[in-house]
Image (tube, rainbow, N blue to C red; front, side, top):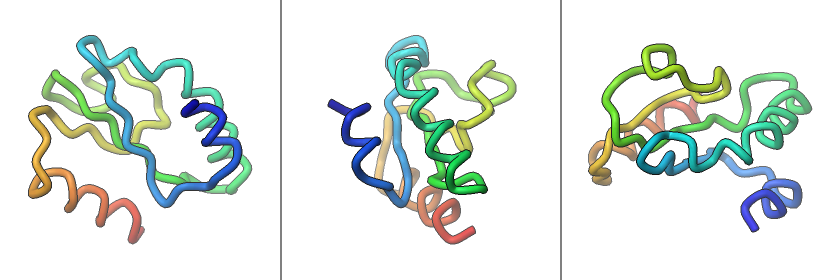
Length: 88
């Protein structure tokens, strides 16, 4: 369902739940990468919700991930990241 929706709508931001090993959304990465390539820039921004603390690089994540937010998620932690990425 998520992959189909991604083809139909262009979101302002994408928030992915990586699951216990940060791999739960790997099947969406190629579609997101295609969408970003078509936009000609890093749009829409991609945020990964993770059980592990670190950066995209230190966690060995896809280069299309713009930010990592460590669980547990609260509006006070997630919203500033969304705002920063959407306004760039």
